[in-house]
Image (cartoon, rainbow, N blue to C red; front, side):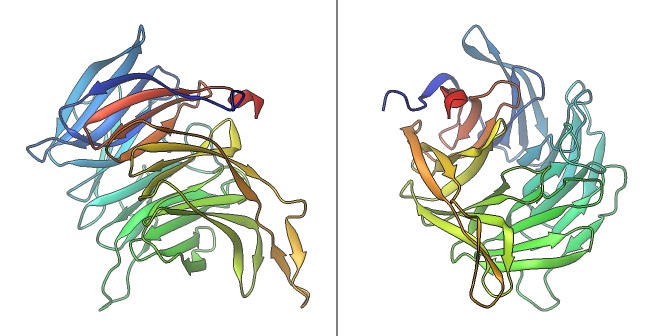
Length: 354
């Protein structure tokens, strides 16, 4: 429909490395792209929007390939990017001086697949923290002021470790509460309460989990999107926990390939974008049910999940789009990168009318 939001490519640029992650630099028209160059070194490029074009302003080479990054634990004025690399290191970089990392720790024994941050950018209560997930099967939470992990979720001794592919912070609505959700390659989904230091919920979604995101980090847990292999993703309603059935969820099939990313719009948590291995972007709107909880007949409250409406879809690439980031400053502005070695900036229109 003509009144639906439109997905428009604004600018693109070819890069000479394989990109894995793009992240907008807070309060700027620039974003950083992380990846691996042909010599298996890390590549960190900074790209700026200038007169309708993307210009590469900085390129830094690091000793090991870069897989993931976040500004989530950085203060606005510092603009510090935390990265995870192929050698298992967690580094923090100051965007104004990229000669040397301002913080470095050997976080894992193998590649750091995923990272998330909370407590920075005025999002979430409490101290800034980072969480990393790795091929070694461990998930670790870090305070950037110290080099030992605050907490570590590790496979049992003698157990074959499952690779952790996705991590996310949520429930950080005051200075004490904080949750971490972790997704593994066998479809295991685990939720850890950092205040109580215990596992509060786990389930299996039948397909390897590629990405996880709470709709907001700084509110009481509301919704969680979990994207997986086999062209499926799920949305969980986290407001009501049932002792036997857990959280209510909605399963969707789309993209006809791996759903690489699920990203909620920072200015409206009911709007989300999913990215497919076939190079498409799908824009969704979540619609709440008339009642969010019901009685199961035994006196226990059971959550009721809503529905998803597909607002629009567009193909941007022949290859998988593997990373996507909404701008916090300009509603509808987004950056993405794909395995055909392209970085793109797109605009989504009419989001203020949803």
